[in-house]
Length: 335
Ligand code: TRP
Image 1 (cartoon, helix red, strand yellow):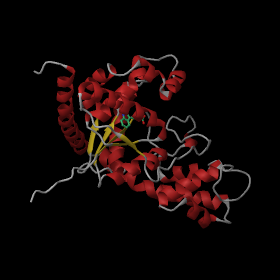
Image 2 (cartoon, rainbow, N blue to C red):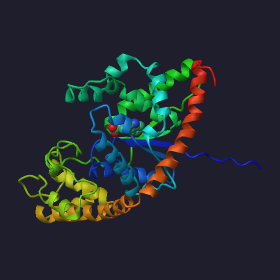
Image 3 (cartoon, rainbow, N blue to C red):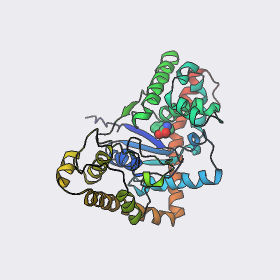
Image 4 (cartoon, protein in one colour):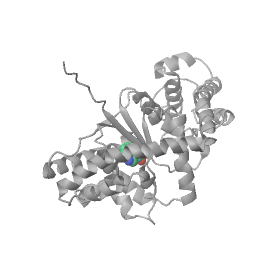
């Protein structure tokens, strides 16, 4: 009897190497990426082509790109299981981006809130790449016939655009692209700044006490949690009126695998000092093996190189299949 082998669904995601990764990236994305590896065919890329839509120092960009890739691995992305690569190593990202940009409207791109935000933030460098950023992102996703894209809320509008562009292309030229869907993780912990808990924890926070770097040493992590902003009453419970405590509870819950309510119960009646110390220790314990693995990888350049070389090769061959189809559909002469 014929056996039907079900193809695993494909996942694609990536981060820009535009700063040091934080606990927010870890709990909000990386931990999720790791969990998806068994059930999906995962491709995780370092989005260095997106990074240059804002000014980057070339030496820094090179260094950080490598560090991001190593942090993916250090966090538990298994290179034997998942495909890891640098976006710039697969030329098809730029090639497909051109074709898609001819199928994307100026009006659609003008509505992107990230473009509006970044134009305000980088008013001296509103370049065309910043404007077409979502088209390159659509190319990243569509090149691999991706089924699911794990992203944060801030990227949902870009996924929506990717779907619109793909559907339009399929309509005009015939079935070409899989229509991707956003994948919202179950936990999807949203980690806020330790200093201004109204804002998302960010690697570009000018105050380093606001974020925990993925590679911060234990003492630093504990010190930063000790300094975390709380409030003047002394109750450990989540609530809209208690953004600082809620954030610490969320972090503790995400790290220990407990619910926020369980975490609150555990610390009920205790002082903020004890609580903050416990959160700091739990986070430090979670990140210690990540830092250790990162340090090992830093000493093994040849191994890391073999990972991203192999990743680029596999990604390129999948991408080439899509590109052949696309070029044929739009009427380019085969060579
Ligand atoms: N724009 C994403 C971010 O800033 C990064 C990214 C680029 C991405 N291309 C992607 C994420 C494709 C998912 C899929 O977070």
